Image 1 (cartoon, rainbow, N blue to C red):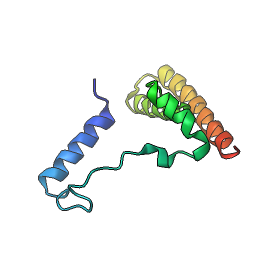
Image 2: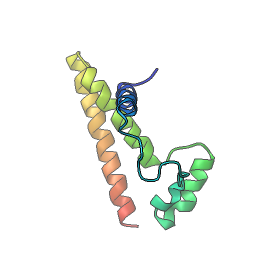
Image 3: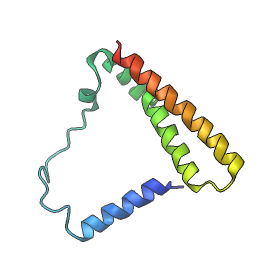
Image 4: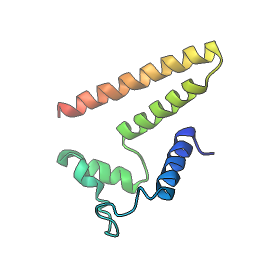
Length: 107
């Protein structure tokens, strides 16, 4: 099942293609540089490569995904009790993510 964000993004991309907004873009027809390691700090590259090869997400990526899912669920929630529970979970995940980012900065 596709989530709402995916569907919206797909619609926007299809509209842009139909309107010709994606024609003649810089780099068009050239191969993509999919080397994600350049965005990973050098001291974490080995960790990330091992996780990637194992098919696992780094903790930050996993938390960001959970946060996005909770935010989407909140947008569609119509039950006050469920909404309160979702808000608590969201706050907890955001705090975890922020603490993890701060910890990584200090390395």
